[in-house]
Figure (spheres, rainbow, N blue to C red):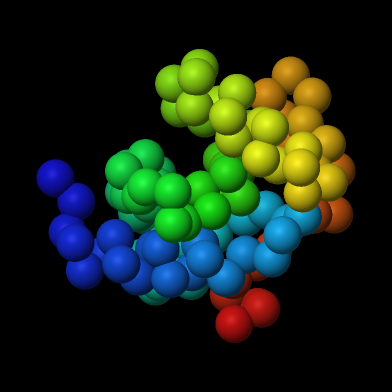
Length: 104
C-alpha cells in the first residue's frame, strides 16, 4: 500500500511534465528527495487514474512498463503528443527527457 501523501507528491510532479516530453520513475523519486523510491513512484503511477499524464513517466531506459493493455494505451497517448515509441521504448529518450530536479 502506498502512502496517499506520497502519491499526491508524485502526481504533482508527473502533472508538470510537458506534453511531448517524458521523465522517469527514478527522476521523480530523486526530485522528492527519495532516490531509492522509484518502485514506489511506479506503484503510485499504476493507480493514478486519468487526471495524471502517466504516459509521460517511463523507466530509466525509456521503456513503457506495466500490463500490455496499459502499455498500448500509453503508447497511443504519447504518439498523439508527438513522441515516437518503437518496441515499447521512447525513441530519442535522452533528448525528450524532462528532469524535475533541474526543471523545478
